[in-house]
Length: 211
Picture 1 (cartoon, rainbow, N blue to C red):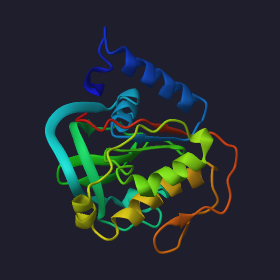
Picture 2 (tube, rainbow, N blue to C red; picture 1 turned 180 degrees about the vertical axis):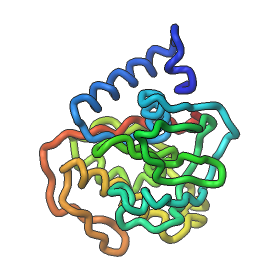
Picture 3 (cartoon, rainbow, N blue to C red; picture 1 turned 90 degrees about the vertical axis):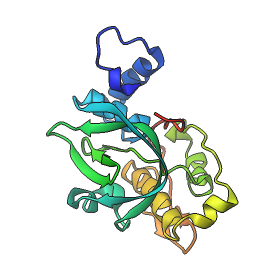
Picture 4 (cartoon, rainbow, N blue to C red; picture 1 turned 45 degrees about the horizontal axis):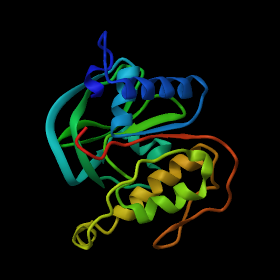
């Protein structure tokens, strides 16, 4: 668990390795988007706090703070933003150097900005694969994104109509900020990419099981 990452003698080596990789990416000014566990790792690395809490699972509304409405990650996304949640650990404190971008009734820090090129979200914008994987697969430099369960037809029917647009736009905003694509352009059901560039970016793998 990321809750204990900063403790002496921390024994979960894969998380220590992930944290080292993440720290190196930040120091090298690589654009980073942390998702769920990545959000929590970024919190600990910047001196914030992650603690166990109530399990949160399902489609929930997230409210953008004023800083979130002005941040590049949420450009073109309205508030509330409906997202998929699946986590047990919660970010409970961020340092003064960070900006809280979004919150929900069950989580006080749903999204945060850590620097000009580094941001993170507690929720899972990658949950609806048909909106995200086409972008991810088209850009080899992005790196690994952990596979996610495909929603059932019932889950898809229950999604708010703006859900897919918002989750796709969030990824496009990150890819655009990283210099990987031209400015996203929405055409009713999908975003079309106008150009690609051989840059590098990092999406910290999400943990779909309770984090």
